[in-house]
Length: 333
Image (cartoon, rainbow, N blue to C red; front, side, top):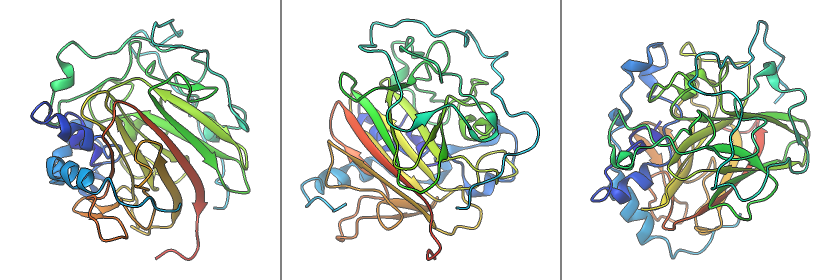
C-alpha cells in the first residue's frame, strides 16, 4: 500500500514525508497480488510524492470539518497464529510507556474470531519496548521497518480508553452483526519489512470480535505503521485479505497519517463502508467517497475540491483516530 513508502519516507528533510507516508502500506501494489515472495515487493513503486502530499494536507488543514455482508463462513483448516518462529513473542512484558492495563470496551471479545486467528497481542496488557534502534526512525524506502515492538507485536494492544495514550484508534461496529477485526504491523511476524498484510489472515498482531454497536479502543506505540480490515474468508493468491483496508502511520515527530484504500481489492469495487476520522485533524475524514486510494496511482481527495492526495494528515505529536466499520453496501460502484 502507499503505506509502503511511508515506511520510512524521507524524514528530517523528509521528516514530514514519513508522516504522510504513514498511511498506506498495508496492502501491496496491484500487480503484486499474484506474487507470493514478500521480498519482491517494492512499496515505493507506487510513485507517491509524500512530501507534496503532506504540504497539500497542511495547506488544507484549516478547511471546514466535514460532517461526518453476509457473515463469512469459517474457513477450513487451522488458522491460529503460529508464533514459534517469532523472536521473543511469547508472554507480554511490562513497559514504562504503559500507563494503564488494557481491557475490552463495549462489545469486544476473542469469542468467535473468524477462523480462530488469535493475534499475538490479544492478551497483552502493557507495551513492550520499541524495536527501533536510535537512528532507525530515519530509515527510508523499502527497507524501512519502523516499530513493530520488542517482543514482536508488543507495540499494539487493546485498552479501556484513549486516555493516557498518544496514539489510539477506536473501532466501532455500525453493522447489525458481529464482525472480526484484524490489525497487523507492516512488518509481519516473520520480521520481513512488508509481509504483514500477506500473513495477517494466518499470523497477525491483534484480533477481536466486535458486537453490533460495540466499540474497542486500541493503543499504538510511536513509529508504528499498521493496517486493518474486517476479516473475510476471501483471500488473494498472495494470502492477504481481498477487501478494503484502513491504514495509518503513527509518528511522534513529523505528523501522522491515515486513509482508506481499495488498492488490495481485486474487483476494485468500492463497496465497503468505512470511515476514519481523528481528533487532531477533525476537518479530514477518509471514507469511500473522499480521501482514499482507488489504485496505486489514483488517490481521491476531499470533496470540497481541496486535494489531500488520498490521505488525511495530522500535524501533531499525537493521533487519536476513530474508525467506523459499516460493512459491505450494495449500491457501490
